[in-house]
Amino acid sequence: MRASAAALALLLIPGLAWAQNGQSVIVIPPAPPQTLPAVPPVSSQTLPSVPPGQVAQPAQSNPQPAQPAQPAPPDVAPPLPNDWVPGQTATLGVLNEVDGSTSQISAAVGAQPVKVGDLLVSVQACANRPPNELPDTAVFLTVQSADAGATAPLFRGWMLRSAPGAAIVGDAAESFRVMGCS
Image (tube, rainbow, N blue to C red; front, side, top):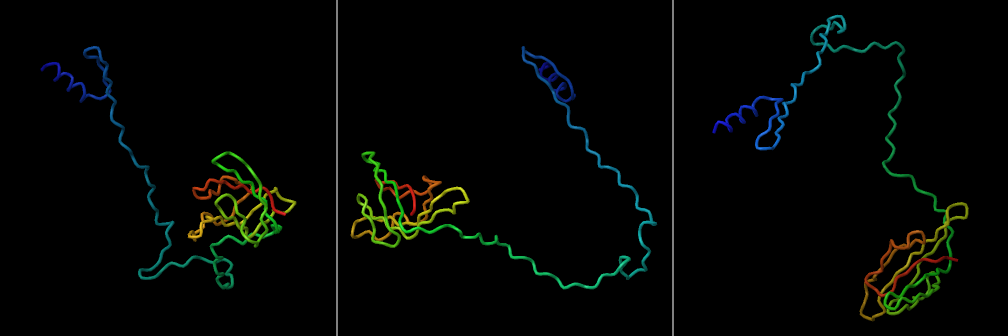
């Protein structure tokens, strides 16, 4: 009982350390109180003398004529120039994920869909980045099942040559990659 009372007394005294039963206990003192910086008193010389009920007007040394307010610009990005060069035929690389075979297909823009395994691939647009910029190719295509009852496409959107893994075609056994546009 005396040992626990002594330990309690030592806990209440900040900044002490002791050892009991081979274990060291360090007591951390509380943080010092925070004091706010002193605010200088406001002198009556810095405040303008204004009779009660009136509002002080700022002094104008050189009055400017009133200008009409300009409307704020819209909060949208300016449109980027579309200087990509359109093509007529897209070349796609096809990986059959079941047996690991690879092949290439060419599909004309706006033509009949090309059958790849159990899928139909149709190309709506293809374009190349201009020659004075980093090379890239974009193809807008639709991939859907060749089954007669399937109406919803597995994939419909843009595929970029510079980002081959960005477009996943459902759970199909074939993967597609943009190879070029001519």
